[in-house]
Amino acid sequence: MYIIYMNPSVYIDSTFFSFYYDERPESQHRRGITIDWWNSQRHFFSLYTSPFVIVEISNPVYPNWEKVSALAQAVPLLTSSDEIEGIINLYLEHKLMPHDDAGDAAHLAMASFYEIDYLLTWNCIHLANANKTNHIRTLNLRMGLLTPEIITPEQLFREE
Image 1 (cartoon, rainbow, N blue to C red):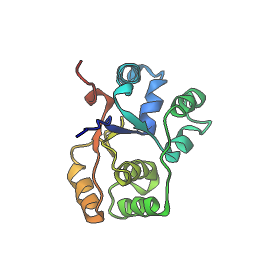
Image 2 (cartoon, rainbow, N blue to C red):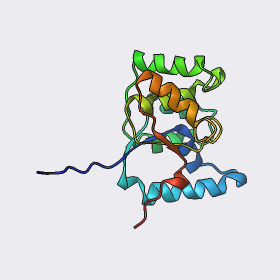
Image 3 (tube, one colour):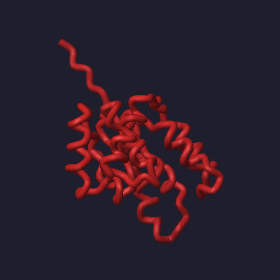
């Protein structure tokens, strides 16, 4: 009998890519962790992102959008579908995420639909927020979806 070990899967949202090139002084701690994670940890995981991320970070008003976009292009894209659009709409209808920021709902929908192990984000208001965990799990359970572990890069370092 052979056991095939697969790397845990990680969906990377737009905040991760943006912090990699964030030059604001108040962002330097997160930027350092992001760069360290990318350089030392990414090879332990199967990485994914989505067209929602690419659209969001490709806006020319986005700080350092060319560099951020180039970094994201190195990660395989999951594809969207009508079913994923339906999941996003349910998240918004149940006020899991604000209507004016459907991007967060899209990231969660993609990671949940594709049964990704981890959703990697620096968004600690709408995603990596312990106060939202039960609401997210309840909605996903009702839809028959698994809920990824929603964490910051700081929480996903592997011990050597």
